[in-house]
Length: 483
Image 1 (tube, rainbow, N blue to C red):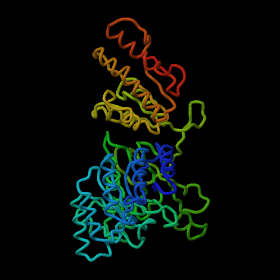
Image 2: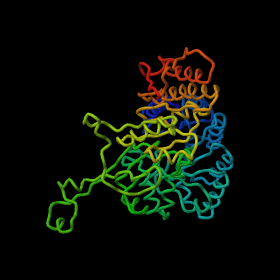
Image 3: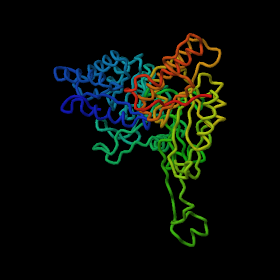
Image 4: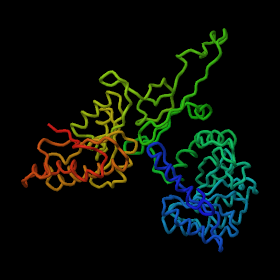
């Protein structure tokens, strides 16, 4: 986002508000980009850049080519990024080889890393000069983000970076979109699969390499955690209709997006043919036939095995006990391997809800999957509120069913039965979870007397449901007695 000049920090504030509003549906990374950073005119921009980072911008960026002193601009950006431990995103067309070489030399070794793009000018340099620059970028650990759909308003929209040359030199290459239906490109759209399609069809990459540029490499460039289809890793998945990857990139219309283990978007494309003798003879889907209106559906076990498939969709609703149609809920259960939690997971999964269980040991994951729940590896005794809240994003309800268990001493009764419950409740507030249940005990009371282990347990179980009621959006004592 542009900062400084007439708009000040107003546009950045709006984007940060949008990021908060979209929490649970998408992750937005905000880049603060001042126009000038050097000389007298750049002093205000430099101060505004520092204010933007303090305000919440997560990346320091800019367009050095627009400043009278491009090298000084890069130095200023790297200095601010180093001060705050932020990654760097610089927009340049890379038409000046000497300037790009200096940028690579200055950026080498910076942690978090440096991203540049779209670098389309590299493709117009002599092959030998472009190869030398690619080797310098690789040695410096600089990521190049190319824009196969077209550049942005500050860069030349002709062509794209020489992705095969860059990859051959060892440069991490990611791909994205430069403009979303704005002045620079009124028909631009932010479809990463279209970017991958163009890399494969127009720039000679294998479909696997093209898809990597918009998936694994893009996540690395954004500083997002690694994704594997294994227990404990983020459930960030894409299901696309197709028999293989090249087919999916060719006709990637119908798709399902899974974010934080939850289906957050479904896109369906329907192709029908007019009612005619030819269509009937060939068995083509015809207009007005309900059976041909299909949507994609996440393949069975989408969280435990990758898949690219298509099936008839079931709506994200179910029939409740009264016979009414109700929405599917996502419920996160702390202590997901306990007896009560496993029973609850089976009941919730059987009625069609999405269930996630927080566990401390990876070997417990198989029992949760058998119960129909998604295992989440997290130690509530050492996790922060932010870490727990990240797993509660998008949840409709949170259930605290964790406990120190039989045989534990008074210390763990306090850290688990009380402390972890309070932590879980605070995280639920931060994630805006509207329903919260504590699996408690008969006789739980914060004023219970006695020093035996069970006395401490009853006090610990009684405290979480009575702590700071004004801070939490739940009324009454939300407690389920354990028998």
